[in-house]
Length: 117
Length: 156
Image (cartoon, rainbow over all chains, first blue to last red; front, side, top):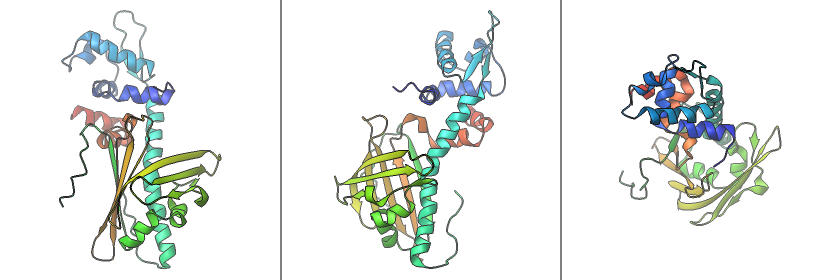
């Protein structure tokens, strides 16, 4: 298992419960109890998920010893999104360039076929 | 269409599909996808070249499909080492390449459909992508904005 930041982020995002937790935190800070509420799993399990998210830098936790509210951190998520966009772009670019190449070899000026994805 | 027999992929596999329609015959497009002289013109994404001398197309099942894509700005080389699985000219092309997880090679199938009016629909379909590609829907959610991602997750 690679341990670069991106791999850690993606590993953290690869779990539906953790994505749901992040989705909840996108609306604002929340305590562990509040985060656990919609799930049919133990507080311990939620804590475990939070540790994974914290290690990935996707969340930070407050210093308040009793509640330690969780907070979403956008930066690693942005990095992950950039990476996905880049890789998604490979086939988009390839298809764009294939279109240009076909036009070049057909010596034609037919109507553009590059529909927006 | 009943050509689903080769597709035994379990649902948890990660898949991405891209579709494009071209004003060209599928024979020509199939040739473009399987000839180094053509591939070198379009294979690399923007900012990346695919030198013809490092493209191998051994067009038979088990044959090699390899490229060395070169980042124009940094010179960094991205080698791809694929093996053809299925060649049905000019309809379908399938190859596999090792992903980050070698137990699960990435399979790419490209299907060429004659639309009957001089145009051809080309669909690339990748399965077994590493988990970080996540599902198409989750990607869309991640890509549009985190708010929409949140809405997507809530709707699960």
